[in-house]
Length: 217
Ligand SMILES: *Cc1c(COP(=O)(O)O)cnc(C)c1O
Image (tube, rainbow, N blue to C red; front, top):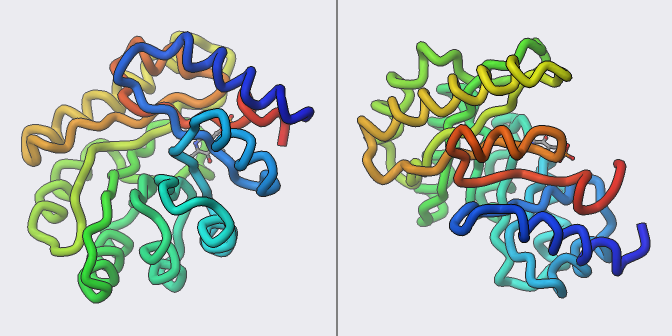
């Protein structure tokens, strides 16, 4: 994609986003020049889904970038991700939650985390069932090295607006459960290129957009 296009795309999305909703530019699989173009246009939040790619890009980009890890994370990669990410949105198992906490505490830092909720029809997507979310929030509240910011989720990949809206309502309801236990955990990360206006209507505070900024992967 011609680079001026990236800043035009960003501007078009930011015009539509309500005040206070944060945009994570999902830069996975994009070359560094694409990230730098977005950075030059003022974008500071970037989303990556692989530990090695995050480490390489964090080393190449200015220090004031806020890095969000949004991919499935294996526990043997946690140390690297904890070293580079500001926020891990994709906490999808109790074991991962405990390992992230232990690694962050060991590194002497606090990392933002979000509990990923699985509602989409696709079995390939990971996360906690809505029934598990409350217990995970109770556990997260007790663990060192982490600050629970809220929940993250994905809607089913479908043309059915009704299904997408229903999925986002379930994720938002999980967010309410978490807030009852951890009042500061007010973030609701949902909405991607194809469905983010629905996510905004359902109360999203963070949207994660790749394709509409950087073009087709
Ligand atoms: C890739 C990805 C996105 C961005 O998807 P686009 O359709 O390119 O906007 C958002 N969230 C997660 C978890 C992703 O893996």
